[in-house]
Picture 1 (spheres, rainbow, N blue to C red):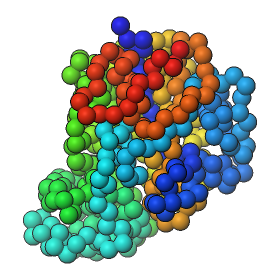
Picture 2 (cartoon, helix red, strand yellow; picture 1 turned 30 degrees about the horizontal axis):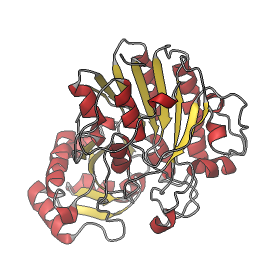
Picture 3 (spheres, rainbow, N blue to C red; picture 1 turned 120 degrees about the horizontal axis):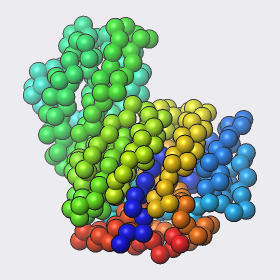
Picture 4 (cartoon, rainbow, N blue to C red; picture 1 turned 120 degrees about the vertical axis):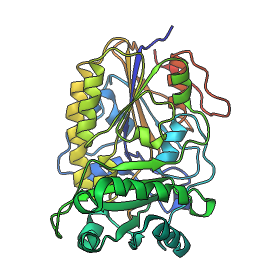
Length: 396
């Protein structure tokens, strides 16, 4: 019989807690997403994270550790090669990724790929460089609207992003073009983790706004994960945010798209009011996309404060037989050079009203301890070839 009937696993996207030992090999020596945000904030109020043990887990300038935190806490190293969203989440659910996805940050996509994309979609490609999503709209959206050309760009992550104005390019056409791009970028030499449809509205520079109709076309996980094991055993696997896209729907029984990180927490609170048996798996992406990649530590800190308010609302409705896990998928230090993710350890905080103990755990060398713990709770065997050891016996 399961110890916890429901487990809520919330990924605060990119909230790293200090550079890993191999960070220098990734150009990330000294990175510390949470610590450097704290250093830049004039004031920083995270009362709910504080009482769960976040300031015990990681030193924060404005927030004191507390004597008796409510949760268990530790820092976790990544076993896989890479520092991207998909690698982090896939490892969390048991996969060991040894070959990183392709990035085209410095060069743009190869001319052979662009030529084939143009021929297959019927649209000339403009852009083809690494750029901020909002900046490239100001630069090229008026041309796209006038000509029917297609904005294609990348970032420091393994992604191809394609923009389309919802009124002139048409959302269905944008999705069609992205499906073609996904097919083309399955080749090993062009393989990216995700193709992302980036719809927007507006008519002129300064007025363009991206909409919530974003859609990610991700590669399917390379093997079965904890999510597949739970679903196959008859448990609910409810996703919030981009989790469904990250796993290409594999192992998901219900998907909920989010308009923002605050909205994602509101959805999670609503789900907590229902009766279900299994996992609610949440990704809150604004920390990464709005603040980490744009190197805005103040915006990131303020987003954490908004999250903390919603976390308090969630804690108020958590049941005796629920388990809450707070974690991240990689770092994205907003004070670091460039705009890429950073190779960092991630936080792990676990709380349930039924826990008799709390405090520091020893740490772990793979994110996969999370998925393995979840599977263990429900008495489900992890799929063959997965990694990670359960922490369930430590959560008493």
